[in-house]
Length: 104
Image (cartoon, rainbow, N blue to C red; front, side, top):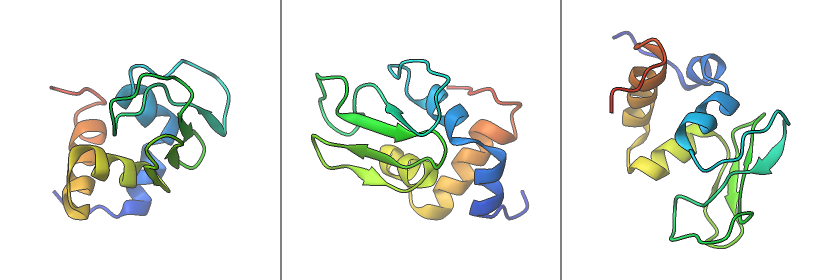
């Protein structure tokens, strides 16, 4: 696979599409900007509304545990325990080079 830059990956994979697949408890919304992300995946969350995602920028924030980041790369890296190169490779394989299907 040729090298894929973070900017190219983020342009090809909109935050809204990523979060809708990655967060099954996130309420479906057509709104942009900050929305309820469902239950926080970074702690044993029991209360909706603590975890927010920005469907424009990909930023995320949990007001309960303090997890936050600026884009889908930071979210994916933290959620799956990957380093940055692994994050780029994993996102490309999961979402771009398999026709949008996840084989997990």
